Image (cartoon, rainbow, N blue to C red; front, side, top):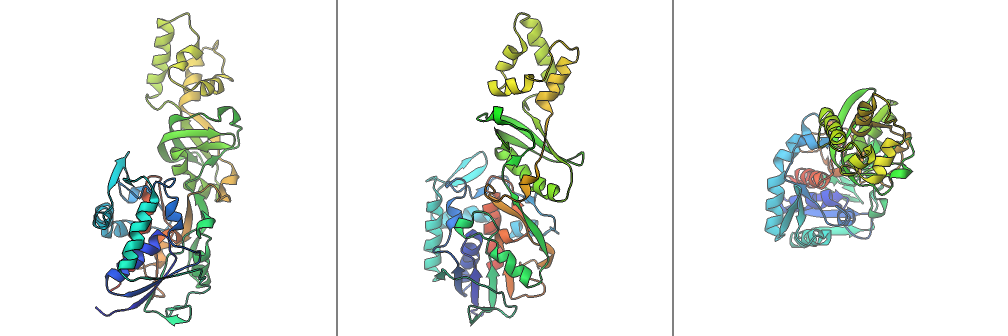
Length: 391
């Protein structure tokens, strides 16, 4: 194998993995990072606990409007098993929680330190505080010629960590086809005022309805706030919601606030409790099932004297609907990742650009993002590995 000069633009997780793979293949690698240190965004992953992969791994947990099989191909080359083996060789002890895999120390600093040690062992050169203003098809970076250039410059979220969209601009300036970016893994802002539910936490199933059709659903903890819905189940719907709102579709979210039963089971339980305890009110019956604030919010517009009350109550609990606000399309401040980016049809299987094969692209700058639960860091590592596998 010929020893090649490889430049990696971006020192996030995808760039680090690209550099490690390229260097382990025997190449001379330089990372260019425009902040003062590498791995800043990795440090805040999973609220600083670094949920870096998930036991339930597959392309079905990822979102892209331009995927043509590339996502599954990347995950097949470096997926869950390969990731666990990689970190095991570095000496990382891990633990599992609800399918997510975390470092045993519960801190992302452990993961970053091990990766830095591996970069040092492989003699990867790291140049910080260096902005790259232009991508050259022939492989020139910062005045030096490289045999391969790997762009791993991130998206538009967490700008203080270096993700400022500069990588997307570099690709756009080269004439690459791009999907306009949008926030993902963020709260769902709604048009209704939910101030009365602030502080509530409950299990729920949320369903995204676009132009009257079910788009997708997600189950998990729901945390309403004055302007909308937060929590993992809301985050998982947010990217598709933002994309649909931008496309001028009517976008609603339907909330099942008691997903432990179906509609019939819920209504039967309420009637059974009323028959068993004829002297107590509906609020008392619901107290054993729902948060008090949630009960007040649900019952406020309902009339218990109506013959349709049980059906109305079932609808209010199991099919509560809110309309998504257009605020979702432009606010990256609460988003964990960026949707959109480089169209996957622009890439070969090795993540090189079809028109400019000396340039490879990986990570969040691509039109791919994953659900909550370690999927985005897994994508960063997997795509970095494939981009760095230069022969």
